Length: 168
Image 1: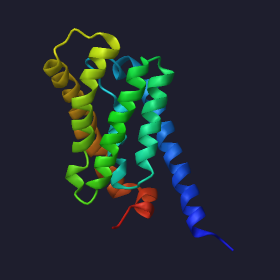
Image 2: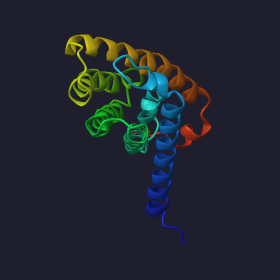
Image 3: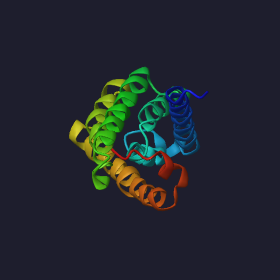
């Protein structure tokens, strides 16, 4: 006899791990543009995935954590960069009923938190508002543009996501 709650938990854990792996690989493949005061993290496009599944929240957090850790980021960046992604993913999950709003929380959380990380972890000389502008532009491009393109494609063609989409 199947235990459906146990099956769902395992499925969500595996799905979250897969999202973490894809986030990590994308960040590492595009490492030259994924880090620094002017960054364009292609992997941030995945921040729209909480629209489809709650497994994306821990998956994105773990993916960001592993990416920063494996690519040699400062420990403050590993911790607070990952927390910025977690805050954004939680916000996206909360706003999942309004498709166009899903990209806003990760853009805002990273735009506000990452400039401070750059200042204190790496000694960036940029003024915080300037860093917010550069990080914000990168986030808008990665999540607002690429992420929304991914969202539209997955909503239309993403069979696996249609099966697990939260319909609350």
